[in-house]
Image 1 (spheres, rainbow, N blue to C red):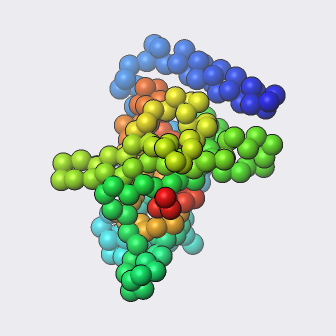
Image 2: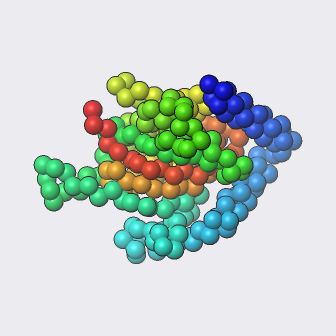
Length: 224
């Protein structure tokens, strides 16, 4: 319980300080800070950025040995595919189990605030928080919807439980659109890493103009 209280107090304090520091900044200045933070993160982690054309030439793969991330130039998202998750469909052994509209998708992830380099949200078992099972008891589960005009993901809890930290942080019920951008390139049980700018993130990211890094260890179709 003490760790739980400490985590929330730390996050609240960090959020308050960030807001106080940025009260005097224009939105344009905050966007510039965000851009610089992302560029520094890329440099500090020795990330090799490839273009969408190069990504296509590679068969929509990224080379892990070179720490490649594809840059989606139109929205500022960077993606590294760790595992495309090519799982065959049992009843159709030759088929690939891709994600489709109306799928319920469970996710296991670790989120990092790129501005502060702090781990801010997660639902996997991390060493420091092993004694707080509420944090990782349930995956974040959402319904994937796509049509000609839009792609959308909305959190669902009926029959799946809820992501304790995500809910406590007040991130809202809409899945970051940066996550959804990855799904057309993936299959069931995929593992990806994403750099998601504020405009493609959750409600808190948009409010504070914060970019986030995600290690999404599993995109998995819900079993029920």
